[in-house]
Length: 398
Ligand SMILES: *Cc1c(COP(=O)(O)O)cnc(C)c1O
Image (cartoon, rainbow, N blue to C red):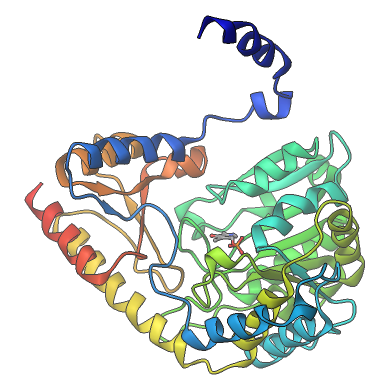
């Protein structure tokens, strides 16, 4: 045993993390995971409404497509960097069907290994050290982290309830806007479940053209919509193709989070910049997965309508339960989240701890998405409907 001491010591010394890792904010979600594991160890029957990861399986026709394609040796080699042309055509066709937007599959579509991958890499294409990226708060953490990994400086755009959780572009000082190279947006929004209409996107495009900013719209929830609401694409407003791209994903639309496949669409030059970064870092998505994704994008959409029905039922169940115990939350038109106000006298952290301790329910404290998430917790609708019903009963008894 003692003979190992020298080696351990040496390993320890040679392992000095880079500043970008050391300076990462504490990963709150890891702490939540630990609290959840502790509760499970104590025998608590935990209901996890924390993570946004669909519980429903990938539709069978997509799985069949993968297994057939995986048996084809032609699919076993390195994929092309931009994605198979047939995949890019399917993505373009999907955009035409869903948003009535026409895209050139040759240069206006780029395959991604999940949209998170594209979001994390795009700052490397557009930010020099010290350059500014405009990032919303609260938000999916990748926009901010990807920016700092590239040596960029995030400028926070608060998302506040008074403006429907849209950023106030007019409040961004001119000198900041002029220095900014990138702006990240995400509607339907995670975590607030807010939506944006075309007039907001028009404002964004004007703002970005005036200040020469690349717009990155993260749009993985466009099909997770309720009550007949339809989420617009950024690219549907005039001028958007000149300044922006949209990131899309099969993860949420087809219950394919584990498959790691998505795509970016929009301005060809912007995509070429992202493509250049990717060419030097990854080697593309497994072609059998791309073929399964083609099956998804070109196949029947009744699986999407079924999924929408399930989330609608869960949303209504949880909202009614929250309101019955005096917790305010708006009914979301889209996404599978409920962004609920924490009761008086609690913080987002203390309320989520209370939910876990008294009811065995995991919810994500809003502050985990940024300082402007304080005062809220996020409930995810990606657990079985009967578990959500059980969560409602337990909250009632708290
Ligand atoms: C889920 C999610 C993503 C990531 O999707 P992948 O394609 O699975 O990487 C991106 N952005 C937001 C806001 C998300 O909630």
